[in-house]
Length: 312
Image (cartoon, rainbow, N blue to C red; front, side, top):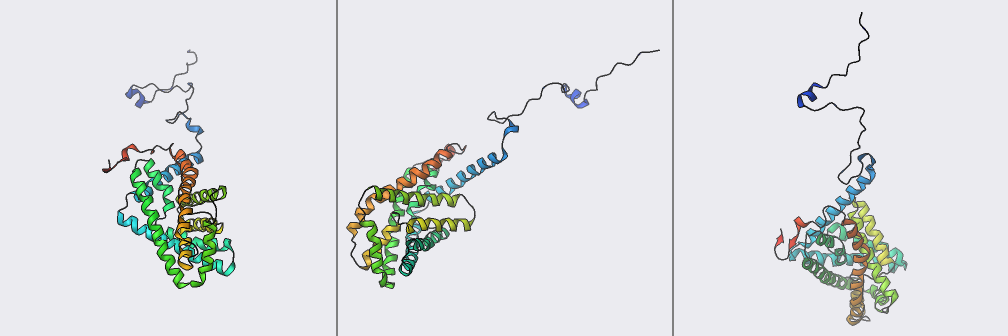
């Protein structure tokens, strides 16, 4: 009579025997998998990962659009800049019409948003729009500082020329707007350079650059239109200092009654332009670049552009 049979170990997997690999030891402690950064895979928040993906995608799209602007031909730079001035003039025409009827700057500011909507849908170029996307493209190595300065310079001059011509036509068509244009222009040229003027100029640069950021943050045209109307409300409704918008209003006053002169415009214009740039570049773009510096695509050495040679 034989005793009880001893328990036998389970047979190893034939595939593992063929490969010469030992069977897994079920009693050994399990090790959690980690990603490349050393973080435990089980601890990764899917929502946080999705946000990071969205930030990276936003950075890539911003760089692509900024690079496209930097590499435009001279013909494209001039035409988009001229149309930008004309479209801002359309917004000013709407602003004057509502202000003349209601006397409310806030309602007139909402009407001015029409100009920013036209600028958005027509894909024209506004000087202060160049404070975000083209700068990010240069940061990522997709353009040069020289191209950025050219974009700014041509954009500013052509915006002013286009607006000057449009306001000349507006004054011929609506001579009754003359006193209103003069009164509105005096708010800018009669404000002395001080804390108030500096703050209004900084806010003007912040609002218009933030508008560009909001446009990049959504794929919905309706949301972009709404953002443009909101920015128009702030810029024109609160009479913030904006180098292009307010210059075109001043040109209208010069055309209409001549009580405001080009000398007064220049005394106002010379400090508003750099303060608009500080507002947009420091308070909006710099923060965006700090966030973008964490992206694997930044600064993009494989895509760098050598001055005068194009992409490498």
